[in-house]
Length: 371
Ligand code: NDP
Image (cartoon, rainbow, N blue to C red; front, side):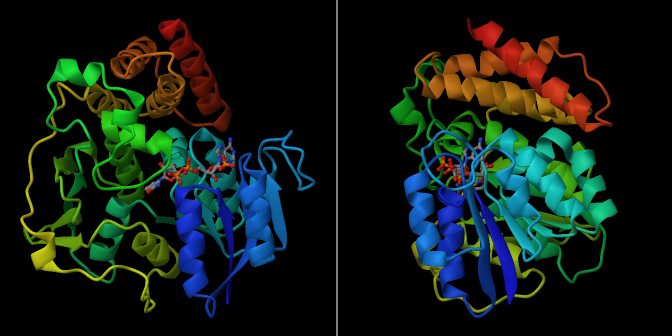
């Protein structure tokens, strides 16, 4: 029986995690739950699961539960917790990832922003504390599932991207897309920030950086292909030219379960069974980097290394929040991120304070760009 903390339990991944755990109660118990500000849902999850700890990261909700950003680290390092599912959105998830790894926990990481901001420091925290990082992202879970138990040199990764709702739109039309259009993802139901990131393809740049740190591959061996059906989650090429892929209908419940159980698999009846005939034709096409410039800027930030990915992540978070708040049109997200990265003086990301300073600087610079 392994103890699980679900950080961000009120969100899309958090709720899917609890759905998985409800079917696997012989193997896991919920020890800690945290939310941002949704006190009502957190209270009802607390009643259902009776965790030892529950807290809200944002104070002022009127709830009597412990509140403040520190609840994330409290939950992540709770002595009865073995596995931390980090399903917080954005930079707010970083401290909990670091603290859990330093405390020797397994981190089932949905919060890719942690790894993008501070990849070297996250890997070092795992080394020093004996913690283990297991991806929840479906593409990275696919890679892990293809690699596990296999020898042979990993040569190349090809991550798939659905292409988002604007895959076939002309560039000028994309720039004026509305919030409703950006939130209408063709294959996945997710929180609003990652859904917008999927429409700009910033999400795929974040995933390329995530893959670089998780699998230790240089950027020229990590590729992205658009696959509108979202059936193949990733391809893995080995030294002999052999290619493996992991397939399935789009659901996050399978990669969540695998992140809890890796390297073994548990039977689970909750995931839709694959049917190749129903899946139909599988198609692949290149990314239109000239239209989805945020993708190109993000991958360039990954290649630049140091504090560039943290600056990319921060500028993107601020621009996406402004778009969702009706303050800028869709096209200004990529303009803003591009301008911030152009102005960023990259530093080696050797200390958390350096990363935090890059994050602060990029947020302020993005706000200036948008004013
Ligand atoms: P949601 O927006 O649905 O949920 C975010 C969760 O984080 C909520 O529980 C929210 O609480 C909480 N939260 C928000 N702000 C803060 C904060 N400042 N401090 C602490 N907690 C906070 O997002 P998703 O579930 O879609 O995504 C979560 C992460 O998983 C992201 O990093 C995303 O990129 C990644 N991911 C998501 C996928 C998906 O299918 N959804 C797929 C792959 C990766 P509250 O509800 O109270 O606001």
